[in-house]
Length: 383
Image 1 (tube, one colour):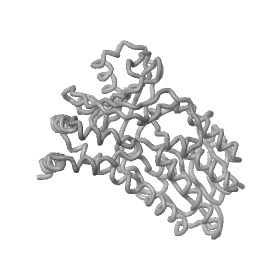
Image 2: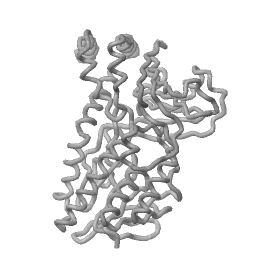
Image 3: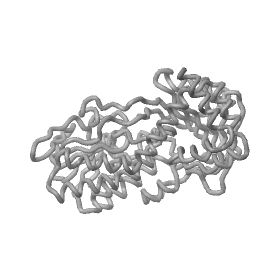
Image 4: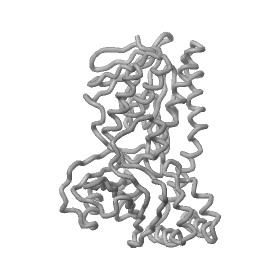
């Protein structure tokens, strides 16, 4: 009988499995797909810190040290820094290497196993699957944005969702160091669009709020206005991003992590950085539960408290930025963009941390005229 059964073999599940196995736990991971890395839903943009935390070396497709933000009136705000903002990695390759690392640490990763439901007793948790049942002391739900494990806790959906899609096209961007980002209701209402250089190909994608309809219609429009609609599409990806967190991430003999826990950056929709910070806390909580020989919610609640201490401030700050962004009209976005084009503000923007973009809010607000402009825009929507 494994100590811990993890539902989901993506990075949240395999990184947790690796850490637990390395600490001496008997861990089983069940994944409903037959291989790691498919299907792919992520743009693959990660920071150096994430790669360092994961301790794997996935194939790097691009290195980003510049960004062009295209406003609704076609004005461009350009930022650049000496060290890379981020890396574009082969996300499928990352998943494979994360799974391999978990297996090397001693975890049992089983493919083609579809989770159905579970039953908790005073003595254990039974995970029912399409190929039988697994009895464990604990279960971890790492089954993504449509988590069945999270839903089992009742009234535990994410606060909202972003629907996204992207394509890899046969086109080489001229500047291989620069990512392009589009804002505005015509291109990506409720979120943003991106174009990433990945060598002889280019990754183009966007997200939209649920209320704005299918994202592919907007993506087709973006490719058309960019003059790239006739380029061959090598690959297409789609998925949903949970925004705003979930009500609870623990129960008796159960913990949630990753998208299943709503641990997603609200500004960018990225989930890898939160996983890299939270998985060690999940391991520590489980080991503490074993030390105490207590697996109820009262002990496992320590996990939620610890991960909120670690990344809660960043996620809450990002959610405030997202709510403010959602208030702005296209004209207000342009006004803000023109203001942020000032050299002193561009200098502050160049220090943005892709894992914690709210880190630049304080320095920018202290710039002349910024606080009053932000406040005026906010009050127009509140009065």
